[in-house]
Image (cartoon, rainbow, N blue to C red; front, side):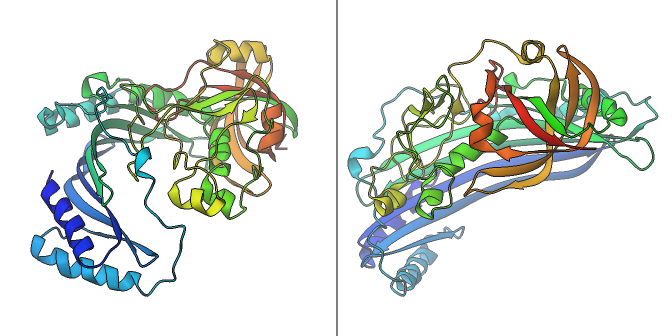
Length: 435
């Protein structure tokens, strides 16, 4: 990583009249391979670098970026950026963070970067895709197409600013995604997919193709249900839908613009008393972990909801200043449910009895001000904990606060490689419309 160019950018900005500056240098190496119906369709390899510059000058603020990292071009670029800043209206809330909040280093390795990233050959990657594609039953005459995708990335970030901040991090990620399309009744063409991912290559699991195929074929017989109130179980592949709405509503941007159904919620019990949701980006080996955010502020474990009470807002420096509140974290990066039922999906289905297991959302929308939502869904109807038949073209509606008051089970089965560790979730009495 060319840290010298970042240092030069900082020095140049200050010399050209900026009263404060933050420079972020990001470099990445990526490979993407697409495998369609048993043949390579697309191959892309790329290496990129970008320099982000946040400028504070005369009470004004501007954010700029460039991928032209030649030193001779840097000074005129930054001078033009500062000139642009001076055309903007002053904003006293645009400041660098309190330096006492910065990450200062010296912590144990968070195990985010695979040292063998560069050792993995292109053939190894295509062999994995070939094996993934072969996991699907090609003798099945209903099979129309298969698509498998490999993606990997090595990313490094280096952040410095005029207040003495210096922080850097690197991470890797590998993923295989498989999508399967089959011939249904009439013009129907059901499709489904599955993904496996890992921070380290040797932890990447196989079976992606087989799982995608097994999830797709039953959807040929999918049907609608009568409209009514049903218990619902959200599979861990889609359960983040009802959590991301909470996080978004607690974000500084939503709160400051009064575009949130959780306005003035801090310290209030709005959720079930046993509900505990945390954000902990300090766990080694877990996707989403990191010691600092994009402003260089040190991260920490924090409760989002504890005992049903809203415990934090997500405020970067700007929105903390706008709202007159302490800076917290700019976003939730490693959400989890430390308190759960101890059950996985199958046990939750049995305990729930009957209802709809939701395995996919298809379109729809939500109102961030009221929390009302309406989403298309697909999945399975189940009775006595047993899946009876797949369902499709149904609609789930309600509002997030009311839905959470009817939460009955929280699973212990989040998907291990996801940054947000959201398990299976079950709710009673949800409104589903169909026939």
